[in-house]
Image (cartoon, rainbow, N blue to C red):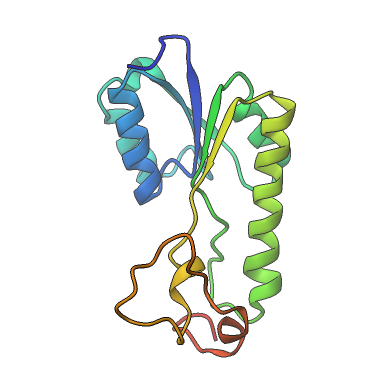
Length: 163
């Protein structure tokens, strides 16, 4: 069980993976600060119905590109699970500018806020994209921390929605 005074933050709390993490943390007795882009968005309402959420879940409006919002959510936390990622709302024409730069800036904002708030532990969740996009990887090889996507392949391939 989490210490009744221990608070952790989960970025992107309304997302699929993050919401399961929020559920698990609440069941284990942690107080959770969850970040969402829009507090009034109905898609986040289910978070408030999770077991122990009424007393142990606090949602914060925070965008990865808004440092002050992140700092407010992270302040007072002993741990942060960085699950959120910048997701553009339309077709991507320039991945470097529209995806990579905001994802890096957002992650830097989270880490800077963690440093200022003196967070003890940060867990960063990545995407399958980090390991999946490599045409030279043997298909029978288990993907692990030694597998990385081929950067040049990612720049040249056409992925649905990323053209």
